[in-house]
Image (tube, rainbow, N blue to C red; front, side, top):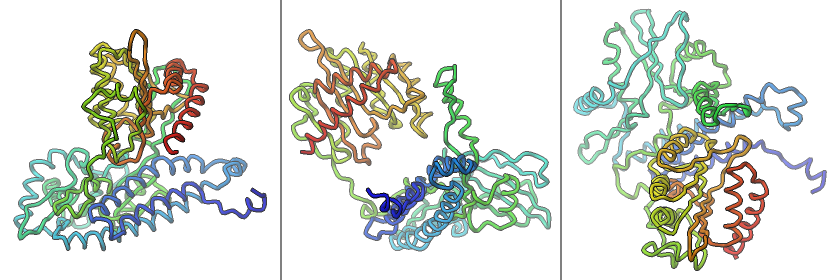
Length: 518
């Protein structure tokens, strides 16, 4: 490439490029050929993506914003300028998001006789139903925090990505403020109301609370009561001291606790909020204008991924049955079949059950003596974990490396590592200087007096839930070169001597992949 071409080539900052990617998710939500509820779910994906973008990428830019001029030259861009550009793009995308939801999807749901109604649209009978539900299910989970108008008490810490109401009670000229967390973590965000005349009605938890605010603040006198949603996104990057002397898992646990109090990256607020309420919030939280993002009435839109389908199957993509893997029969020993040839599983088009069957058979097979596996992200009710624990209980030696630095899954991985240790599995943790992103499993089986090795190598996680959505490949093989490399790799991971083993394995896998492609 010539120097003149380089100088003229456009350079798009990677964070700006990522925002353009997320805009393509919005385009899917706008595509009328996509089933209606899937379009709503694309809005959910857009929202979830943007949350993580602020927690990680914007957080990193904020850390770089105060570097000196020489450092900016090395970076190749000015972090503050990029942050300003990000805000401008995100504000435009939020407006596009609101238009798609309010003016297209809501109207098209109504054409399907499905209505998302708010607290002002409840008739008497539905209002009684909502109030009874509030008293039985919601009220026990609510504890308002009364805020000090005179600024004599510290403002409460807002949890990362939780929905809050900022509430204003006015009695004559006297004003009280309160803060209330919407308990969407413990209560379903959506309530399906009784149908009438073939019409379906759904109300959000947010609006159930709005409808029943009088039951929360009955001890106060007020003429008016107003409630507007806000959501704070915090810096989620983990600062782990590489020189910690305590166990790594303890250091990580402490870092996770600090994450919940990370620096504010974005305050998303209902654009209908009165200016005096917004000013009160900004002043008390000591926020800069750069973190303020006007949004719509409902935050944490990622919850809409679970929006109930009260209509017909045409509102969603058809669920397709998994394709069979040719000549790989789950009713026969998977080891006997792998011994004859390699198999490639293409997910999600083919079933993750082949991987579960591989580990389940290993757990009970008298010939299996050892299982080595790396884990990165796991399903909530992991069958992988159950198979490994059962294998240990059946007398197999099970070695499991869990990478704790799996962003936003760290707590879950700490939980699973404890479960595995309780079940008799030998658990190793990721290394501070590296991130073990490999998805590999090596099973040692004694056949005719000597050990034979069976391997599974995957591009996707050992996660049966995400395997139904993400496109990945999972390969079974007894290839002696690959299994020998895996033996060295697992030994290296355990002893922190693995750079050469990884390079050798990568080369073999590349050659093997070319054989499948060709």
